[in-house]
Length: 312
Ligand code: NAD
Ligand code: MLT
Image (tube, rainbow, N blue to C red; front, side, top):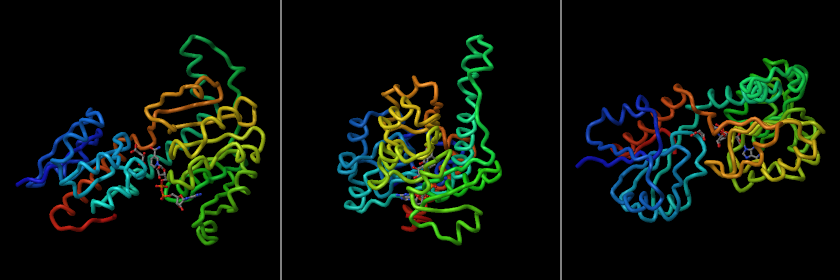
């Protein structure tokens, strides 16, 4: 009998080619099911493949009688209840490096768009307003970029920022002096990084410890006029605190790809002219989407046929 595979978020067709090619796998792609429909249907499936949209909650997992593996076509697994999965012996795999480059490039694009107010100027121009006064930006050269979370993406961003002639200072609990030296960057405590930076970019996972890591207290120790980027996860920055920090002019710019609630429901931040935003597009390139889908497809095939995976 064929293994039943459910894909509940849009994944790259080229990326899932290994699964389509493999014998003994029946693929169902249903990206519009409500959580209730997913709960009703999940019992039939051996594997579930998701991106970030599907919330794989305890309630879903408890109904997943046949589920053996959940594949996350991306990095963050904060949309999957790992504890519930572990309790039921369901393995969770992600694609830890398939979208690193795309996320780092998007971060740099957001940093530069924010510093030079490109989206705001384009918006004005689209409305037939030729305004050269309102969109004066600042240079990155010789400014300090604070990187909070120097993992795969943070390190790629740091290297690119060095290329922009920025000084880089990073905080990561696992950062060693050797790694910082190799990258040619400084390192310090989170407070030291927040105090020193002209620009800040966060690249941690969303964990209990990182939820609202950037909160009112954190904003209060930053330089006046700091600019901040979040291309990691909504919730690392306290959006309410950010709103007030921008209103009070403490923060001069924010570039946001991710939000506390997605799809977004609270549009207050977007009413502020200091904010540039994208709807969680950090990994949305042809290359990254193909790469992450290939990685998890191969893991699903390997696990269901031989009980082994590349990462877990
Ligand atoms: P990674 O695991 O390589 O790096 C994360 C780093 O954060 C690690 O080095 C870890 O030590 C560090 N960290 C953990 N807790 C910390 C804390 N309290 N303070 C500072 N650093 C801390 O992961 P990555 O591939 O670099 O991705 C980082 C995050 O970016 C992912 O978890 C995901 O949520 C997000 N992401 C978003 C997009 C997007 O589309 N916007 C794309 C890819 C990844
Ligand atoms: C990730 O964690 O990899 C990102 O959220 C990318 C995504 O799946 O959109």
